[in-house]
Length: 385
Ligand SMILES: Cc1ncc(COP(=O)(O)O)c(C=O)c1O
Picture 1 (cartoon, rainbow, N blue to C red):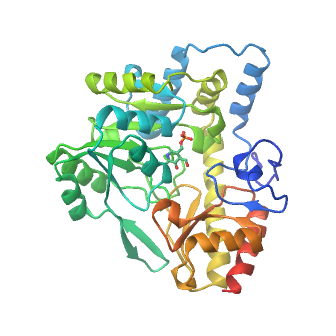
Picture 2: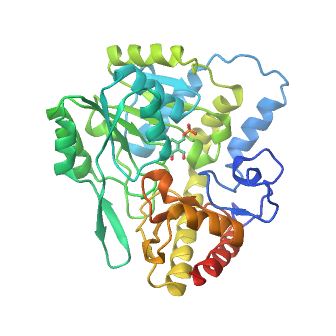
């Protein structure tokens, strides 16, 4: 095997949110959304060679950065981006927050499709906007369940006079849905009809399971604002680099101003070279990663499914996050999370964070043997309930 995702990396005592926050040497963390794998070899080499210069002053983002970004999305995803549509910033969350600040006045509404990534809620709140929920519809399937957009409810939410923006997640965290072209067209039509802009967070767009296709929302709706980053796929979240793509000059100027007001207009030299290496040379590694992740997902389903037939597991189409229904256990998600940590020494995410009490989220982006041990611990606690 060319890339060894089975390698047991050591992240304890490295100043790591996922591994060092619990202050417990026995804890196995399956929470924060980063991976326990090394990044792609090309990315590691680029960062090491940049580090070797010993000079880490302020960065002027070079043309080669935009070339790498635009070529990748053009060739891999059929999305043509002009360099001058791009604003770089220090993360997707800083991007979302600045965009909301630019486009939504205090007291105006932002639609969030729940369950949703927790920072969606805080970004809306921190910018004094109003959260308007458009809960996803749960659909039972032969193998578990999935979600669909409730378009009737979306129309009602979009038609409220205070609604300005829909915060779309494509593909969706935590449900792992990859929105289809038909779904995205319907989103566009509803939002257009109601004068609501779409802000699409596409940070998970490279982590697509076989048989599904990521459709860049901007190819359906060129008026949208899109955020992307190589950070989830290439495990470079700590390098804090993300991009906003906004074709409309007037809107882009507003966003640019708010990126400056929030003082998140600088990125660092390692983020720049990492992005270039990821997008220029990371494709083969990424394909191998996706195969490994899908095998992990299958393993998780088989292991938990055979031990606990009542446990319903969401049919994931993307990401490395499993979304699991725990309602039948009769315990709140927060209490289950606490119990798993205290008695099982395994740290998952409580569904409550995502407006999904009665669910848990498991990050399975780790070597399989570690996942096996974490699931063994999880099963040990579930059996007692
Ligand atoms: C949907 C989504 N957006 C944004 C982020 C975080 O982005 P960043 O680290 O670039 O701020 C995450 C991290 O899990 C995420 O799932």
